[in-house]
Image 1 (tube, rainbow, N blue to C red):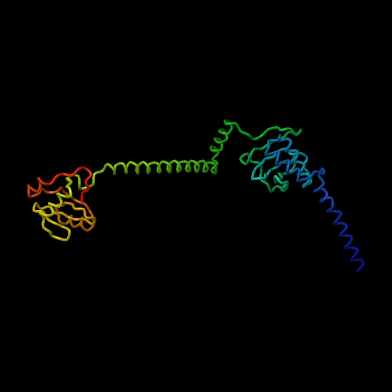
Image 2: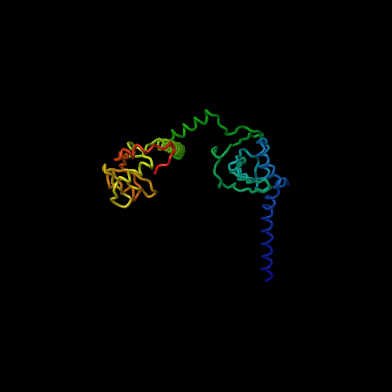
Length: 292
């Protein structure tokens, strides 16, 4: 029993001695506060500090959380969110590290084992540094370089980029067609209203309006052939509509249609009065007199 306890105690001490250097290396660094480093990196990126100063802070924060980072040779801000930045950092001789910093001092370091993808110029601007730590170059393109790169990708048959360009062209074309269609519809509606105001009522182009007094005289001369339908000796039918308006038709059928449904089809002019004396006694009213 004592031998077993001694063996367990020995193994525990050995494990402590093995793990202690690693834990010490993760928090050792140069004694800097990781929260302050994260805040400095966040402020430096957003306020346009020199990239070399940001690279030094990145190396320090990686040294706090990782075993080694001699110097940062390249870094890229590949995701920028409100109060949060995701940065890829390349240390000399090591795989890429991912560093996430926030305005409140939050920091997370991950990677270093090949899980992060390579730096891609399409994700953001890449800063590269010389052995002395000075800014050597960046991935910023001139207009000519951007055009040349686009042409090269199309010539190489990059299907994804080609489909992207085609999709963007299709979206822009659809937006243009939609705007043109809405404008054309509004224009047609406006012109249709203007034509409707100028349009004469169908089948009533050759009618001659008669006053209410003349219609009363014509009705006295007519004989009733159906409810609200009268026939004048001249053969013209007089029909009274739903609202009391009296109209003239050559066909009894259209007179009945007007009486029942209010449909004014094949309407004709008022016939002449049979009694000339009554016609002479009837005077035309002034303009604006209501007609029924």
